[in-house]
Image 1 (cartoon, helix red, strand yellow):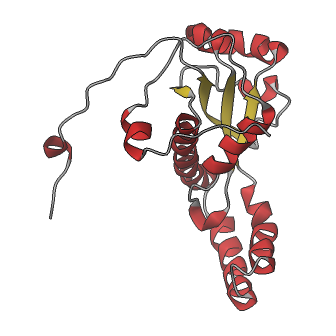
Image 2: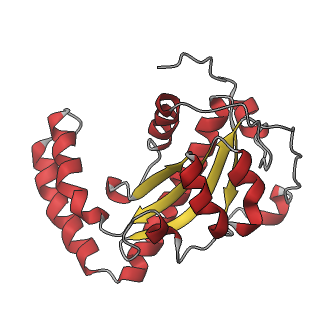
Length: 212
């Protein structure tokens, strides 16, 4: 596995992040390093810890050729990035409840009696909610993991750009996934920036926050 000096300065990671559209074509992120970035991202919280996020790392020439017509207005990111990560949510994530909670007990993170109480309650609660409600819950979780992914990438010395403009109704099937099960959230291009990008304006906290 590649040994890389990570950025440990919190302020540099947060304030230095830019949405980059042009990447260094000579920089390739290894599967091992990408795995580390994704592992850090998945430390993000999720509703009742069901971790509904799923990733497709598109880094091969064939994979990018498949993506190009689906992301027509983001060709630079697709062509120059080391990879584009497609973030989905699994609408069947409830199926993983037993595996997740059993593993938590095995690792000593949770007493068995807590698992035995929580698992049936989770299945009953989420099994009864409308699909749209479940999707909304999953999208919140996917937003959390996506932001953490971008910050993790930044800590590894890479840059990213979240992309919402693409053919969401076609992307799952384009990569051999069940479109009724896997709901697309966003694309995230990742690589070494070819330029510095530019900062963007943020509204004053005084205008967007109230204290009660």
